[in-house]
Structures are given as structure tokens and as C-alpha cells.
Image 1: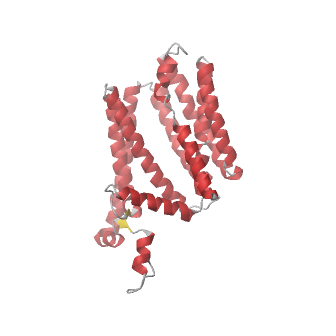
Image 2: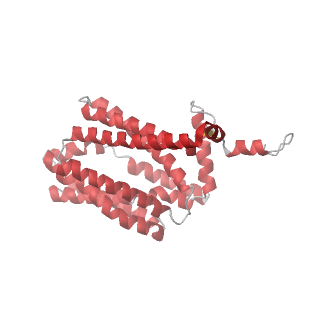
Image 3: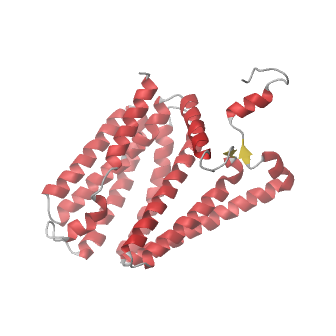
Length: 303
């Protein structure tokens, strides 16, 4: 088995099992129940915020050390963090221990940057680029289209549309009293978010050198977590807003993001003008189709 294929299989297997957490939706109920007997105020304002702050602080070390340590030790440390989190949930009790549990969870999530960037560092770019192209072709069978989107042209517009869509979902979750509506909206929100992150990560990774994936992705996550920490402090601790209204506020945040992306999208399109948009094209040809078009007429070189 080739090294790159073995790496992909191991990473996909690890990612599948670490993300398979069927008990996570019931964490709040578990902490409020007789097993831990915490109050709602303690859970939302004393326990949960620890994760955001520890995630932020630890991420600084992670993005500085990930490329230096060559990813594997950091991924192992991530696994240890997850094991410690669930051990504390099972056998520890009290607010302090649950805060320490959230700290361990912060370790696990902060070190995820190594997992997400390891495949880009270890697998040759031509391989994961071809895989992305093949995967895109498989999706076209379900009606997405025959050619790849020209992300340089429509990237901001796509980000704006999905951000607005996610914002609406969060507002609905904040106001609904039906649990199934909340679950369906949450699933759709997570799917759209992960699709967006995957596409964005690929677009960033293809422009980077192999020895700086962890640094660049880590800094990006750090800045995002810094803003999230500020927002969490204002909403959860300073204003002490109840959870339903928090969803509405976060939905408004996504709405603001959508407006920003729409502004940059329309500014870019206005700068290009109709002729520039026509030349750029909405769709990007795949490498195979480009090679076919470049072959001399009457030859079979591209085939």
C-alpha cells in the first residue's frame, strides 16, 4: 500500500471515530442530572465558557509547534485530550472538575489543527487535487453541474449566501420550541458549514508551502477563536443572555458576515465589469478538459 493512501485511510478512520460522539447532544442534560447535579447557571456561565478560553490560549502553542513537531505528536496529544475529557465526565464531579474537563476538551480541539493540516503536508498536492477533482465529478452526477465553479469569481458570493442561510437557521433555532425543528436545522447548519470549510481549506492549502500549513491554519483559527472568546464573554458572562436569545444573536452575527461578503462580492464584480466577468467565466474547466482543448486539432494527444 502506498504511503499517501495509508495516511489518508488512517486519518479518515481516526476522524470518523473521534467525531462519532452520540452522547454529545445530551451533555447539558447529563450535567444537570443526578450524575453531576449542577445548576443551569453553573453549566452555562461557569463550565461551558472555559472551553472557549482554553481553546484560545492553547491554540497559540499549537500553531507554533505543529510544523516543528511534524504533526504526529500533536495528533496523539489530541487523542489523549479526548480520552481525558470522557474520563472526567464519567468519574469526576463538581464545578471545578467539569471546568477541568472543558480545559481538556480545549486541548483536544486546539490540537485539531494538526489533524486538519496533516493530510496537506504528507500527501502530494497533485494527489489531493486529483481526488478533489474526482470527488467533484462524482457530485455532478447528482446535478451540481459539469464544470467546477470559478471560486476566484464567485467565492465571496458563495460565502455570503451560505452565511446568510446559516444565520437564518440559527435564528429559527433560537425561537423554535419544537425539538425536531431544532435538530433538523442544526444538522443542515453543520453540513453547510463543513462544506464551506472544506472548500475554503483547499483553496488556502493549494497556495501554501508544505512546511507552513500548521502555522497558517493555526493563526486563522486563533483569530477566529479570539473573536469568539470576546463574543462569548459579552453574551454569556457580561450580559448573561439566556441560550435561546444567544442563538438569535449568533444568527445576527452570521447576517453581518453575509453583508460583508456581499459587499466584497459585488465590489469585485463591479470592478471586473461585464466584459471581465464574461472572460473569467462562471465555471472553471477541469485539468483534463483543459488538456483536451490544448491538444492540436486532428490529434489524439489529450486522449
